Length: 132
Figure 1 (cartoon, helix red, strand yellow):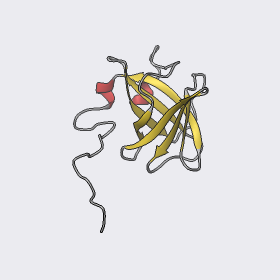
Figure 2 (figure 1 turned 30 degrees about the horizontal axis):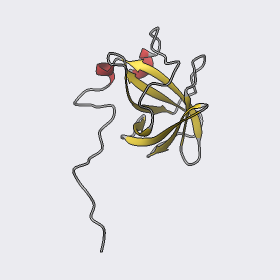
Figure 3 (figure 1 turned 120 degrees about the vertical axis):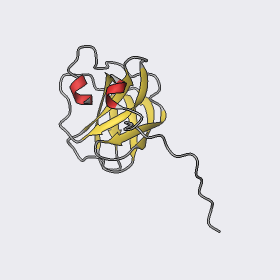
């Protein structure tokens, strides 16, 4: 559903949205929510993915912005050939691979629902006690 929305005029981002810094929600298609550590450089966003399933090349990350509120939601990573003819906004990397990062506005209600959220918030209700 996310990729289908890319064909709609005006959905591709040409600039980084606000909010792509610090720890951000991220996930590889087919895997659960993880996170990435994001920073901004002269070349755009630089994200370090912290989770399972990161693709070897080919692949790309897609910054997702909710179109109705124009708010950053997270990064979805695909194991597909990189997109052609759209602005690259940065990179996302694992410990072994770096792939391009693009951005898109999406109709959030079409890709994320309460019953099937795109990004599951981290569980902050449990804490691990130190061993000892």
